[in-house]
Image (cartoon, rainbow, N blue to C red; front, side, top):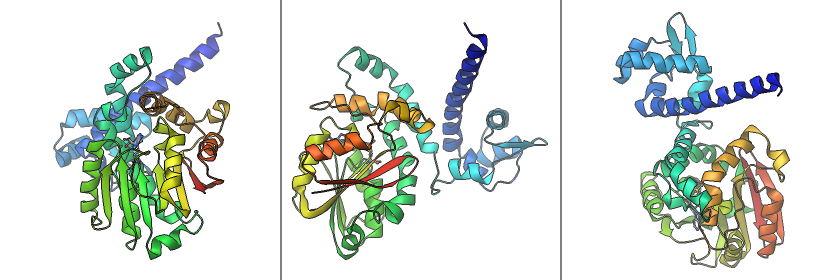
Length: 348
Ligand SMILES: C[S@@+](CC[C@H](N)C(=O)[O-])C[C@H]1O[C@@H](n2cnc3c(N)ncnc32)[C@H](O)[C@@H]1O
């Protein structure tokens, strides 16, 4: 036994356990408005923050101490300050790097632990809709900032000829749309186009419909329950998948259905978690997060559906290209990327 290696590994585990405990504290801060109350980056005492947010001052002090020890909040002379950068990540829901929603997704993994025990001892399946409800709200809040920052400004312009069609009036279907964040963002940017959102999870469709109304785009967006293999229509200009194709049991069948639903010059926009093609190349902080989430979410969802291909969240470009080639597409390329996403384009 190498004691130095043991100590190093114990240090890593203690750090990870602290990180996991901090995620629960992030959820507290988010729900109680503690970050928002510190978003001006002004120093504050625990007592002042407690009275501003209606929270117990002694518990607020402990929460602040945990944040100071984590490097999330600065501590100077008995006062605490949320730096601007941390405020962007934790307090400002409109910022492109807001991540508090991600903590809620991780919370759902703990809520669903018993279901995963059963899945791992059984056929491996756990359907999306069987997760704790915080999975759905957390996913929406985790993904929306990235879509707001990149979808209209970078991802759609990276596709060949798509923005021109959207400006003049295109027909778009957003498959696996969840709460419709991506659909509503596109509809707000392109008023001449029409958008359909499809998801097999009925409660998500209800929320998406509400989001379209709140976003002022209900006149050009409709949402319907359906699967990636049975939605109607054969004249779409753009078929989108945002972080959902790898979740499906039969991605090849889904891509075949997309093929027949597209116009001859139509385009598929495939947004997937960032991944390289091999496990050894995915040993990164992002790869770690996505493999861990995929064990609980993406892979068991795929195993719960017909075919059960189980691509997982780290499928990578080469594997995804194979899916689209098998479905009949002849063009497939990486159009863009971010640290979290691969943006892929497929055409007939
Ligand atoms: C990780 S969520 C992503 C939701 C949304 N696209 C977003 O980016 O916020 C995956 C979504 O795919 C949906 N889904 C999974 N399998 C599906 C299928 N075969 N047909 C339609 N929707 C499916 C789930 O219900 C879930 O809403």
